[in-house]
Amino acid sequence: MKRRKVTACAMAALMAMGLVGTVMPVYAKSNLKNVDDVVEIKMAVWTSGAADIYNKAAEGFNQTHDNIKLSVEMQSGDYNQYLGAKTAAKDLPDLFEVSSYSQVYDFAQNGLLADVSDHEFVDKLYDNAKEAVTYDGKVWGFPQMYEWWGVLYNKDLFKKAGIEKVPETFDEMKAVCEKLQAANITPFTAIYKDNWTVSQEFCSLFGGVLGGKDKIDSWLDSMNKGEGSFKVDGVDRVFDFMDLMKENSGQNYMDSDAATGFYAFANQEAAMIFLSDAATISVGSVTQDLPIGFFAVPVSDNADDAEVVACATDAIVANANGEHLDEALEVLDYIGDGGDWLKTVTNSYGGFMACMDIEADDEIASKDYYKDLKAYMDAGKVRSTLWNQLPSGASDVLGDDVQGYFAGITDEDQTLDALDEGFKKLAEE
Image (cartoon, rainbow, N blue to C red):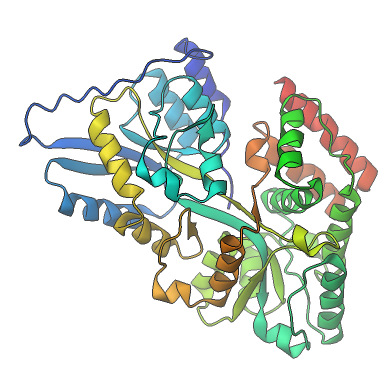
């Protein structure tokens, strides 16, 4: 799924208000006159065909709260432009959706978000999810769902090829591809025509060779300062894996975009697809009968490096300067209690996982890929995404340069040089 990056228009709005670099005090300013008054809380979310889901979730809240009416405003256009305009007009809604990490940082450091560090839902969040909404040691919102990345595979095709266990190392991954080829089964579904797919694949692989959270954080810090490089120890492994994909994705693999790839996987034209929850949703729209399993991408010869790449890509936050902050926070607590709201939203999306341990819908929980994914999550075998913690525009640079490698236009050294040059320019902007 495409990431929505924080854009220049949102930051320009903050600068125009004279907010950048300053912190405004947070006050609860409810004008509720008496307990019989009904306060309307407006929440804005970016949506692509999800209006029914959020309206159903809001209806559940309204049926159980007499003094607050929750209205969800669906924004289907340029959401960052919407936030920028609302920020400039000092008219942000009571609750609104932001991208994790960079956008949380931008709004929090400028005093636009309410600090929710002491709310009960914070302790229920998975650590990885909490990190996505933490800035300056404080928590600034509720991350609803994880997006995740790894390898989805057709269990029937694996069985047909005589593959009895999923690979945990790169050598085992190569052996899987060899067995599939021997059985005349295309190993990987090609989805390389879109730059967002290859940028996410590259980052998912690259994070696996950096060597743990501390080294990942250090690398991200250096890249955001314009001082880092993609030329790290182990980067050859990333290109080895991409070579494996190129060699095992059939003919004319650069002609296939994500939509084509999803359809091909759903029709059992290939055994594996390396992407995200977006694949389960799209494949599910074609068929519900495909026996799909999941495993973390094995980029190295150390099985411990095979981790789910996951991130709470978006969060619901409260407007610190809203007229009815207390009531807005009451709604946020309802959203974050792991009850009806979260179950409605996550179960309706299907491929997503909640950012805390909740009971999934029976139909979803029975899916093999969901069981596999949850086993990784419960074991703590998860690491954060990279692209949404890098400078704005990172996905475009990554996508274009990595596509060049997939297409055979550039070699490894040329690709790394182009990435380093592109990211230094991003850091200077």
